[in-house]
Amino acid sequence: MLSQAIVEFGQPLKEIETATPTPQGSEVLIKTAHAGVCHSDVHIHDGYFDLGGGNKLPMGNLKLPHTLGHEIEGEVVAVGPDVKGVKVGDHYAVYPWIGCGDCAACLRNEENYCLKPRQLGCSSGIAGGYATHVLVPHPKYLLDFGKTNPALAAAYMCSGLTAFGAMKKVGALAPGDEVVVLGCGGVGMMGIQFAKALFGKGPIAADIDDGRLEAAKKAGAKATYNSKDPANAKKLVADTGGAYAIVDFVGSESSFAFANAITRNKGSKIIIVGLFGGAMSMPLPLFPLRALSIIGSFVGSLPEAQQMMEIVRAGKVDPIPYAERPLAQAGQTLSDLRAGKITGRVVLTP
Image (cartoon, rainbow, N blue to C red; front, side, top):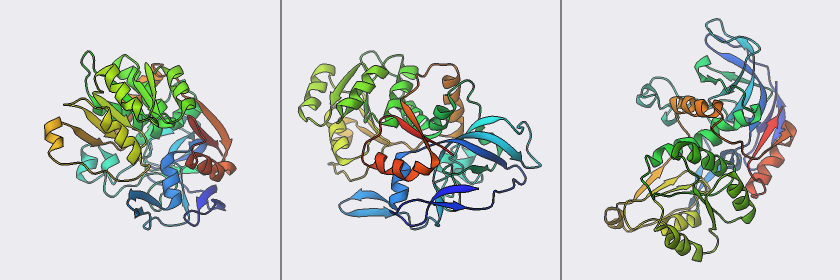
């Protein structure tokens, strides 16, 4: 099989050829039809996450060459002898956040929190979807996407699930509670859709790019604010009384500062999703005095993915903007995403 792989961190991807695996036991071999390009792929390709202050979290434990890609949709082309209920020719989206199966997190059905993960395209030695084929360890990770556009079905496995899992952490809204989607890239656009589906109304959208804000408004955001202008934080608070929940799909020092500036005096939530990088510092007494919750959100569990796909199959989520590119353009797509040149999602087609 052919893959676009990292052979050296920060350097161009290279096409490599390896033997196409033969599924054993409960394994399923998928011929990749669509593979979404996620901002996490950019950080893995760089070889580190930015912790702020010049500090980095290196990906030194990732064995190279490594094939990225955790947003996968494709066709079953072979199954192991223990597989039931799945047949060759079926098409599925693939849940990639696979755990060890034995630890406490996995036994809670929270494989995405496993400390010994087998995440497709993210864990060392586990190849992902920037390839012609992907080996999935069990058919339970194959999700029916119904009549959903297959390219978007792939993107739902990370950008959609990440947005859905974060919005679930908002909880129930009371009349007058407002949710802010901060950062309107591919995941943020999904966040707008799932906020509408879960809360019955569009969220407020904030971003530093007017083009993305226009796209957010077309997608159903009830109001938009350009977060590059500090005055807009005060304007948003004046207009709303402060946000009940801010879902930060950027995760930078400047986005957190904007999120912190638009909360209510008491009882707000800031849910950090993005991995852009940086650090923050706050006086500890302000947490109880403001009853402020700062929560991290990492993709979603398999049960959440199944719940999300029920909503998607029911047609309750509008499609986000996306573009298809050939697999050979994987490296250029990572560069474009790193430079902020992509609205919505790019999906690779091997």
